Image (cartoon, rainbow, N blue to C red; front, side):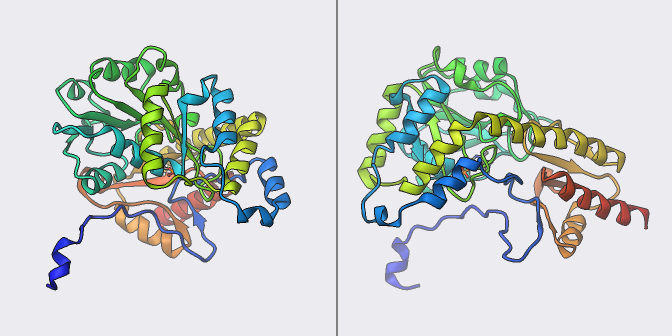
Length: 351
Ligand SMILES: *Cc1c(COP(=O)(O)O)cnc(C)c1O
Protein backbone atom coordinates (compact mmCIF):
# COMPACT_ATOMS: atom_id res chain seq x y z
CA UNK A 1 0.00 0.00 0.00
CA UNK A 2 1.33 3.45 -0.89
CA UNK A 3 1.60 5.90 1.97
CA UNK A 4 -1.04 8.27 0.61
CA UNK A 5 -3.54 5.47 0.28
CA UNK A 6 -4.11 5.19 3.99
CA UNK A 7 -5.76 8.62 3.99
CA UNK A 8 -8.19 7.93 1.18
CA UNK A 9 -11.81 7.60 2.24
CA UNK A 10 -13.20 4.23 1.28
CA UNK A 11 -16.91 3.72 0.95
CA UNK A 12 -19.18 1.03 -0.38
CA UNK A 13 -20.96 2.92 -3.19
CA UNK A 14 -24.64 2.73 -4.07
CA UNK A 15 -25.13 0.53 -7.11
CA UNK A 16 -27.90 1.89 -9.35
CA UNK A 17 -29.87 -0.25 -11.80
CA UNK A 18 -28.31 -0.66 -15.22
CA UNK A 19 -28.78 1.92 -17.97
CA UNK A 20 -28.23 -0.20 -21.08
CA UNK A 21 -27.37 1.85 -24.17
CA UNK A 22 -29.19 -0.42 -26.61
CA UNK A 23 -32.95 -0.62 -26.88
CA UNK A 24 -34.58 -2.77 -24.23
CA UNK A 25 -37.82 -2.92 -22.27
CA UNK A 26 -36.62 -1.07 -19.25
CA UNK A 27 -38.49 -1.93 -16.07
CA UNK A 28 -35.52 -1.78 -13.70
CA UNK A 29 -35.14 1.77 -12.33
CA UNK A 30 -38.70 3.02 -11.79
CA UNK A 31 -38.55 5.63 -14.53
CA UNK A 32 -41.85 6.88 -15.90
CA UNK A 33 -42.76 5.34 -19.27
CA UNK A 34 -44.46 8.55 -20.42
CA UNK A 35 -42.69 11.72 -21.58
CA UNK A 36 -42.54 14.83 -19.38
CA UNK A 37 -45.33 17.43 -19.69
CA UNK A 38 -45.49 19.03 -23.18
CA UNK A 39 -44.43 22.41 -21.73
CA UNK A 40 -41.05 20.90 -20.85
CA UNK A 41 -40.37 20.03 -24.47
CA UNK A 42 -41.30 23.55 -25.50
CA UNK A 43 -38.85 25.07 -23.01
CA UNK A 44 -36.07 22.88 -24.36
CA UNK A 45 -36.84 23.86 -27.94
CA UNK A 46 -36.84 27.55 -27.11
CA UNK A 47 -33.75 27.44 -24.91
CA UNK A 48 -31.25 30.19 -25.69
CA UNK A 49 -27.77 28.68 -25.48
CA UNK A 50 -26.21 32.16 -25.05
CA UNK A 51 -27.69 32.34 -21.60
CA UNK A 52 -25.52 29.48 -20.51
CA UNK A 53 -22.65 31.99 -20.20
CA UNK A 54 -24.27 33.16 -17.02
CA UNK A 55 -24.44 31.37 -13.71
CA UNK A 56 -27.93 30.22 -12.79
CA UNK A 57 -29.87 31.86 -9.97
CA UNK A 58 -28.30 30.36 -6.83
CA UNK A 59 -31.64 30.62 -5.04
CA UNK A 60 -33.44 28.70 -7.79
CA UNK A 61 -36.26 31.19 -7.22
CA UNK A 62 -38.54 30.35 -10.13
CA UNK A 63 -38.71 26.70 -9.20
CA UNK A 64 -38.93 27.32 -5.46
CA UNK A 65 -41.82 29.72 -6.07
CA UNK A 66 -43.63 27.33 -8.42
CA UNK A 67 -43.38 24.52 -5.85
CA UNK A 68 -44.39 26.78 -2.95
CA UNK A 69 -47.47 27.90 -4.83
CA UNK A 70 -48.33 24.38 -5.92
CA UNK A 71 -48.19 22.98 -2.40
CA UNK A 72 -49.58 26.05 -0.65
CA UNK A 73 -46.49 26.64 1.51
CA UNK A 74 -44.17 29.61 1.95
CA UNK A 75 -41.18 30.16 -0.35
CA UNK A 76 -38.98 29.79 2.70
CA UNK A 77 -40.27 26.26 3.15
CA UNK A 78 -38.88 24.81 -0.08
CA UNK A 79 -35.38 23.58 -0.83
CA UNK A 80 -34.49 22.23 -4.29
CA UNK A 81 -31.60 20.05 -5.34
CA UNK A 82 -30.13 17.89 -8.10
CA UNK A 83 -32.54 14.99 -7.70
CA UNK A 84 -33.85 13.98 -4.33
CA UNK A 85 -30.59 12.06 -3.89
CA UNK A 86 -28.85 15.42 -3.60
CA UNK A 87 -31.55 16.76 -1.28
CA UNK A 88 -31.47 13.67 0.94
CA UNK A 89 -27.71 13.65 1.09
CA UNK A 90 -27.76 17.32 2.10
CA UNK A 91 -30.32 16.46 4.80
CA UNK A 92 -28.06 13.73 6.22
CA UNK A 93 -25.18 16.19 6.35
CA UNK A 94 -27.25 18.97 7.90
CA UNK A 95 -29.48 17.19 10.39
CA UNK A 96 -27.91 13.91 11.39
CA UNK A 97 -25.08 15.00 13.66
CA UNK A 98 -25.82 13.12 16.86
CA UNK A 99 -23.74 10.44 18.54
CA UNK A 100 -26.90 8.39 18.70
CA UNK A 101 -27.80 6.24 15.71
CA UNK A 102 -30.07 7.34 12.90
CA UNK A 103 -32.85 4.79 12.41
CA UNK A 104 -34.15 3.41 9.11
CA UNK A 105 -35.60 0.10 7.89
CA UNK A 106 -33.29 -2.82 7.07
CA UNK A 107 -34.98 -3.26 3.70
CA UNK A 108 -35.24 0.20 2.16
CA UNK A 109 -33.60 2.64 -0.23
CA UNK A 110 -29.99 1.48 -0.06
CA UNK A 111 -28.57 4.98 -0.42
CA UNK A 112 -29.35 5.76 3.25
CA UNK A 113 -26.63 3.42 4.40
CA UNK A 114 -24.19 4.80 1.84
CA UNK A 115 -24.65 8.40 3.02
CA UNK A 116 -24.52 7.41 6.67
CA UNK A 117 -21.18 5.73 6.05
CA UNK A 118 -19.85 8.49 3.83
CA UNK A 119 -20.64 11.14 6.47
CA UNK A 120 -19.68 8.84 9.36
CA UNK A 121 -23.13 9.00 10.91
CA UNK A 122 -23.94 6.13 13.27
CA UNK A 123 -27.05 4.23 12.15
CA UNK A 124 -29.13 1.27 13.15
CA UNK A 125 -31.40 -0.63 10.76
CA UNK A 126 -34.81 -1.70 12.04
CA UNK A 127 -36.12 -5.02 10.74
CA UNK A 128 -39.26 -5.03 8.64
CA UNK A 129 -41.79 -7.58 9.93
CA UNK A 130 -42.68 -10.92 8.28
CA UNK A 131 -44.92 -9.20 5.74
CA UNK A 132 -42.26 -6.57 4.95
CA UNK A 133 -44.01 -3.80 6.91
CA UNK A 134 -42.24 -1.17 8.97
CA UNK A 135 -42.73 -1.81 12.71
CA UNK A 136 -43.57 1.58 14.19
CA UNK A 137 -42.60 0.67 17.77
CA UNK A 138 -39.02 0.11 16.61
CA UNK A 139 -38.82 3.87 16.11
CA UNK A 140 -39.88 4.78 19.64
CA UNK A 141 -36.38 4.34 21.08
CA UNK A 142 -33.75 7.04 21.54
CA UNK A 143 -32.02 7.95 18.29
CA UNK A 144 -30.19 10.61 16.31
CA UNK A 145 -32.85 10.97 13.62
CA UNK A 146 -35.26 8.89 11.57
CA UNK A 147 -35.67 8.42 7.83
CA UNK A 148 -37.96 6.12 5.87
CA UNK A 149 -39.59 6.16 2.45
CA UNK A 150 -43.36 6.10 2.17
CA UNK A 151 -44.20 4.09 0.09
CA UNK A 152 -41.15 2.09 1.10
CA UNK A 153 -38.75 0.87 -1.57
CA UNK A 154 -38.30 -1.76 -2.89
CA UNK A 155 -41.39 -3.20 -1.21
CA UNK A 156 -43.80 -0.54 -2.52
CA UNK A 157 -45.83 -0.71 0.68
CA UNK A 158 -47.60 2.52 1.64
CA UNK A 159 -48.50 3.33 5.23
CA UNK A 160 -51.34 5.70 6.02
CA UNK A 161 -50.86 9.13 7.56
CA UNK A 162 -51.84 7.98 11.02
CA UNK A 163 -48.90 5.54 10.96
CA UNK A 164 -46.48 8.18 9.68
CA UNK A 165 -47.68 10.70 12.25
CA UNK A 166 -47.22 8.20 15.05
CA UNK A 167 -43.53 7.82 14.19
CA UNK A 168 -43.06 11.60 13.94
CA UNK A 169 -44.93 12.20 17.20
CA UNK A 170 -42.65 9.74 19.02
CA UNK A 171 -39.54 11.51 17.71
CA UNK A 172 -40.04 15.19 18.32
CA UNK A 173 -36.50 15.67 19.66
CA UNK A 174 -34.91 14.68 16.37
CA UNK A 175 -35.44 15.31 12.66
CA UNK A 176 -37.73 12.87 10.87
CA UNK A 177 -37.40 12.67 7.08
CA UNK A 178 -40.19 11.08 5.07
CA UNK A 179 -38.90 10.23 1.59
CA UNK A 180 -41.96 10.45 -0.65
CA UNK A 181 -40.39 9.55 -4.01
CA UNK A 182 -43.49 7.49 -4.88
CA UNK A 183 -46.22 9.27 -2.95
CA UNK A 184 -48.18 10.41 -6.03
CA UNK A 185 -48.95 6.79 -6.89
CA UNK A 186 -50.09 6.02 -3.36
CA UNK A 187 -52.16 8.26 -1.14
CA UNK A 188 -51.94 11.13 1.29
CA UNK A 189 -48.65 12.93 1.67
CA UNK A 190 -47.12 13.79 5.04
CA UNK A 191 -47.05 17.43 3.86
CA UNK A 192 -50.23 18.13 5.80
CA UNK A 193 -48.43 17.17 9.02
CA UNK A 194 -45.93 20.02 8.60
CA UNK A 195 -48.26 22.43 10.39
CA UNK A 196 -48.04 20.35 13.54
CA UNK A 197 -44.48 19.01 13.50
CA UNK A 198 -41.52 21.36 13.21
CA UNK A 199 -39.14 18.37 13.17
CA UNK A 200 -40.58 16.95 9.92
CA UNK A 201 -38.99 17.11 6.45
CA UNK A 202 -40.86 15.78 3.42
CA UNK A 203 -38.70 14.98 0.39
CA UNK A 204 -40.12 14.44 -3.10
CA UNK A 205 -38.75 14.15 -6.64
CA UNK A 206 -39.46 14.92 -10.29
CA UNK A 207 -37.91 11.60 -11.30
CA UNK A 208 -40.87 9.28 -10.92
CA UNK A 209 -44.37 10.78 -11.24
CA UNK A 210 -43.12 13.80 -13.24
CA UNK A 211 -41.15 11.76 -15.79
CA UNK A 212 -37.92 13.75 -15.38
CA UNK A 213 -35.32 11.37 -13.95
CA UNK A 214 -32.83 12.60 -16.55
CA UNK A 215 -33.25 16.23 -15.51
CA UNK A 216 -32.37 15.61 -11.83
CA UNK A 217 -34.75 17.66 -9.68
CA UNK A 218 -35.76 16.92 -6.10
CA UNK A 219 -37.06 19.04 -3.25
CA UNK A 220 -37.62 19.16 0.47
CA UNK A 221 -40.50 20.92 2.20
CA UNK A 222 -40.22 21.77 5.89
CA UNK A 223 -40.34 24.68 8.32
CA UNK A 224 -38.48 27.86 7.26
CA UNK A 225 -35.94 27.23 10.06
CA UNK A 226 -34.99 23.78 8.77
CA UNK A 227 -34.88 24.98 5.16
CA UNK A 228 -32.54 27.78 6.19
CA UNK A 229 -30.16 25.26 7.74
CA UNK A 230 -30.22 23.21 4.53
CA UNK A 231 -29.45 26.29 2.46
CA UNK A 232 -26.58 27.25 4.75
CA UNK A 233 -24.98 23.86 4.19
CA UNK A 234 -25.58 24.05 0.45
CA UNK A 235 -24.06 27.54 0.17
CA UNK A 236 -21.10 26.38 2.20
CA UNK A 237 -19.88 24.15 -0.60
CA UNK A 238 -21.79 24.70 -3.86
CA UNK A 239 -24.12 27.63 -4.49
CA UNK A 240 -25.08 26.71 -8.04
CA UNK A 241 -26.51 23.25 -7.77
CA UNK A 242 -29.49 23.82 -10.08
CA UNK A 243 -28.78 24.59 -13.73
CA UNK A 244 -30.91 26.99 -15.75
CA UNK A 245 -32.44 24.32 -17.94
CA UNK A 246 -33.60 22.27 -14.97
CA UNK A 247 -35.12 25.31 -13.33
CA UNK A 248 -37.11 26.28 -16.44
CA UNK A 249 -38.23 22.73 -17.20
CA UNK A 250 -39.14 22.06 -13.59
CA UNK A 251 -41.47 25.04 -13.52
CA UNK A 252 -43.29 23.81 -16.63
CA UNK A 253 -43.73 20.34 -15.16
CA UNK A 254 -45.25 21.73 -11.96
CA UNK A 255 -47.64 23.96 -13.90
CA UNK A 256 -49.25 21.17 -15.91
CA UNK A 257 -51.40 19.53 -13.26
CA UNK A 258 -53.80 17.94 -15.76
CA UNK A 259 -51.00 16.11 -17.58
CA UNK A 260 -49.52 15.01 -14.29
CA UNK A 261 -52.80 13.58 -13.06
CA UNK A 262 -53.50 11.83 -16.35
CA UNK A 263 -50.16 10.05 -16.54
CA UNK A 264 -50.17 9.11 -12.86
CA UNK A 265 -53.63 7.60 -13.32
CA UNK A 266 -52.46 5.64 -16.35
CA UNK A 267 -49.68 4.11 -14.29
CA UNK A 268 -51.95 3.35 -11.35
CA UNK A 269 -54.46 1.69 -13.70
CA UNK A 270 -51.75 -0.33 -15.43
CA UNK A 271 -50.48 -1.37 -11.99
CA UNK A 272 -53.91 -2.69 -10.97
CA UNK A 273 -54.19 -4.65 -14.20
CA UNK A 274 -50.59 -5.91 -13.94
CA UNK A 275 -51.08 -7.16 -10.38
CA UNK A 276 -53.96 -9.34 -11.62
CA UNK A 277 -51.77 -10.70 -14.40
CA UNK A 278 -48.96 -11.49 -11.97
CA UNK A 279 -51.36 -13.27 -9.65
CA UNK A 280 -52.87 -15.31 -12.48
CA UNK A 281 -49.33 -16.43 -13.30
CA UNK A 282 -48.85 -17.59 -9.70
CA UNK A 283 -46.73 -14.67 -8.46
CA UNK A 284 -47.24 -13.14 -5.03
CA UNK A 285 -47.21 -9.32 -5.20
CA UNK A 286 -46.73 -7.09 -2.18
CA UNK A 287 -49.45 -4.46 -2.01
CA UNK A 288 -47.95 -1.59 -4.03
CA UNK A 289 -48.47 2.15 -3.66
CA UNK A 290 -45.64 2.87 -6.11
CA UNK A 291 -44.89 2.73 -9.83
CA UNK A 292 -43.39 -0.72 -9.38
CA UNK A 293 -44.35 -4.06 -7.91
CA UNK A 294 -42.27 -6.37 -5.74
CA UNK A 295 -43.03 -9.95 -6.73
CA UNK A 296 -41.97 -13.51 -5.98
CA UNK A 297 -42.92 -16.86 -7.49
CA UNK A 298 -43.08 -20.11 -5.49
CA UNK A 299 -41.91 -22.27 -8.40
CA UNK A 300 -39.43 -20.05 -10.25
CA UNK A 301 -36.12 -18.78 -8.95
CA UNK A 302 -35.96 -14.98 -9.04
CA UNK A 303 -32.31 -14.94 -10.09
CA UNK A 304 -32.98 -17.22 -13.03
CA UNK A 305 -36.01 -15.21 -14.12
CA UNK A 306 -33.92 -12.06 -13.92
CA UNK A 307 -31.20 -13.50 -16.17
CA UNK A 308 -33.62 -14.97 -18.68
CA UNK A 309 -35.62 -11.77 -18.88
CA UNK A 310 -32.45 -9.85 -19.52
CA UNK A 311 -31.46 -12.20 -22.34
CA UNK A 312 -34.84 -11.43 -23.84
CA UNK A 313 -34.22 -7.68 -23.59
CA UNK A 314 -36.45 -7.10 -20.56
CA UNK A 315 -34.64 -5.45 -17.64
CA UNK A 316 -36.01 -5.70 -14.09
CA UNK A 317 -34.30 -5.21 -10.72
CA UNK A 318 -32.94 -8.06 -8.64
CA UNK A 319 -30.80 -7.95 -5.49
CA UNK A 320 -30.35 -11.64 -4.82
CA UNK A 321 -29.53 -11.49 -1.14
CA UNK A 322 -31.06 -11.84 2.30
CA UNK A 323 -34.79 -11.90 2.79
CA UNK A 324 -35.48 -10.45 -0.66
CA UNK A 325 -33.41 -13.07 -2.51
CA UNK A 326 -36.49 -14.51 -4.23
CA UNK A 327 -38.01 -11.16 -5.19
CA UNK A 328 -37.95 -9.07 -8.34
CA UNK A 329 -38.79 -5.39 -8.43
CA UNK A 330 -40.57 -4.59 -11.65
CA UNK A 331 -41.35 -1.04 -12.76
CA UNK A 332 -44.81 -0.39 -14.20
CA UNK A 333 -44.20 0.49 -17.85
CA UNK A 334 -46.71 1.15 -20.58
CA UNK A 335 -49.44 -1.41 -21.15
CA UNK A 336 -47.51 -2.67 -24.22
CA UNK A 337 -44.29 -3.11 -22.27
CA UNK A 338 -46.14 -5.03 -19.59
CA UNK A 339 -47.82 -7.19 -22.24
CA UNK A 340 -44.36 -8.16 -23.49
CA UNK A 341 -43.32 -9.07 -19.94
CA UNK A 342 -46.38 -11.25 -19.40
CA UNK A 343 -45.95 -12.90 -22.80
CA UNK A 344 -42.44 -13.87 -21.69
CA UNK A 345 -43.75 -15.39 -18.44
CA UNK A 346 -46.59 -17.23 -20.14
CA UNK A 347 -44.21 -18.79 -22.67
CA UNK A 348 -41.76 -19.79 -20.02
CA UNK A 349 -44.24 -21.14 -17.47
CA UNK A 350 -46.13 -23.26 -20.00
CA UNK A 351 -42.97 -25.04 -21.25
C1 LIG B 1 -35.84 7.14 -6.86
C2 LIG B 1 -35.71 7.39 -5.41
C3 LIG B 1 -35.05 8.51 -4.89
C4 LIG B 1 -34.18 9.41 -5.70
O1 LIG B 1 -34.66 9.97 -6.76
P1 LIG B 1 -33.92 11.14 -7.53
O2 LIG B 1 -33.93 10.67 -8.93
O3 LIG B 1 -32.54 11.34 -6.98
O4 LIG B 1 -34.79 12.30 -7.28
C5 LIG B 1 -35.07 8.73 -3.54
N1 LIG B 1 -35.67 7.88 -2.70
C6 LIG B 1 -36.28 6.78 -3.15
C7 LIG B 1 -36.92 5.87 -2.18
C8 LIG B 1 -36.30 6.49 -4.51
O5 LIG B 1 -36.86 5.37 -4.94
